[in-house]
Image (tube, rainbow, N blue to C red; front, side):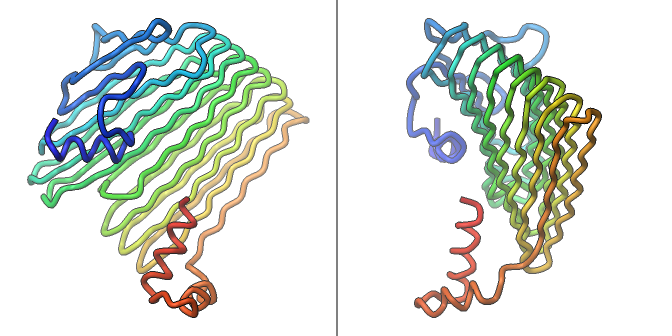
Length: 305
């Protein structure tokens, strides 16, 4: 890997070299390294671009890294990754895509990830998106995540996009069975004329299952954001959706939460708050010696932490 590719890898996966455990690197549309373990297998799909990640039942305290890097202008790809997670697992999956575009052509990566999570399994999924480069070609990322959760399973998704992506449409759908729990934490910052759209849809089908969707975002300059969340309570369940956004400059944010209760014991809540940074917060930090710009940066960093 060259210096640009190494920087992208560090940004999206916090890797400074080859990780321990299972991994699959994809660089400029091609495989660039793979490792499997006794408990985790990675298999190339034969019918389309992508891989199958197979995690054996009972696998504990292991991780999988599957970063994607695009450093050439003009690459457009769609990749399908399926995760088959056995019963009683406890694993961490680190994904993400970094695009460096120094040219004039659009570079785009659409990653479709499908999770099949077995009974009593626990999964932490981390996905970071990052863009760089001084070219005028667009950097486009459109992640799609589909989750099927069996009884007593737990999944925490931590998704981050805070720099350099010109356009993104982020779709997440999930179906939960009895006592399954899904937690999604999203952080987005847009600037310039960037556009970011988030679509969450969760079907709470199982008894005593639950979800918590949390989105925090900052829209700067003339960037635009759209947040849509839909929770369907189809059984005795708990659902919560929260969108908090900070507006700066001429940014625009729309939040459209929707909750539908189809069962008398479905307990659903949605919250949305959009506004600018409070002036008293800036003044307070400026009294401690910060400039106005430094105070704003401090508040934004704390909000997205």
